[in-house]
Each structure stands twice: as C-alpha cells, then as structure tokens.
Length: 157
Image (tube, rainbow, N blue to C red; front, side, top):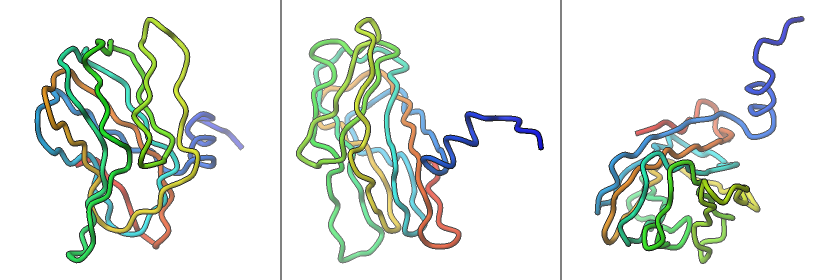
C-alpha cells in the first residue's frame, strides 16, 4: 500500500479535518471566519499573521449559534495584538478557556504557542473574529475538527 501524504493522513487521524480562512485586511468589525453546519468538535485552532499588525486594537474569537434562543459566547477573551507590533509569521493561539487571552509569539522570537487544552463542542452557527478597536494587518486562521453528526462540516466563510 502506498502512502502519498503522510502528514495529511496523520493530521486527520490525530486532529480531524482541516479548514483555513485568510482574513486580510483586518477591520473594525465582526467577521465570520467559519460556518458550522451541525454538531462538531473543534480539536485545534490557531492563526498565522500574514500582514504585520501594528495598530493598537483588540481582537477575539466568538461562536454565534444559529439557534435563535442561544447566546453568542466568547471562545477567547479580547486581546491587544497591535500595541507591540505582531510581525508576519507570528503564531496566535489560545488554550480553550474563555477568560484566557490570545497567546502569541513573534516571528523573530521563535518558539511556538500552546494549543487547546480541551476540545470545544459547537452546534450549527458561525465562528467569528471581533475587532473592537483599531485594526490592521492580516491573519490566516487554521481549524481542525471532527464531525459528531453525520455530514456535519466546518467551512471557511
């Protein structure tokens, strides 16, 4: 038996399916990054800065469920990414605890960032980035997930 892409096969068996969304340029807005069709478990989510972030401003990720009676919830607390410039190549991530901030390591600093401490279950809805104050730069977000409901997907918006 031939294996054509060891990395993709391992990633899928360990983390599930991979989707990504480029968001450039960042703006003061609520931007839908990913649409969730039905019940899924997010196993990892992290970003790579693609355009330098240099304007002081806060960003957070939140989940906005489709169910009308449900409440939008933060996935991570609002974090200032621009007061100290966040350079191209910097990694952004969070540990899955709502009160935690986005953690990042600048490209020049090397090293990595922690990933989710525990998976996050989400129903149908949207994963959004909220930039509440000044914004510039760009981020590509990567998300891995496992579908719980047959046919459920998470897709870039």
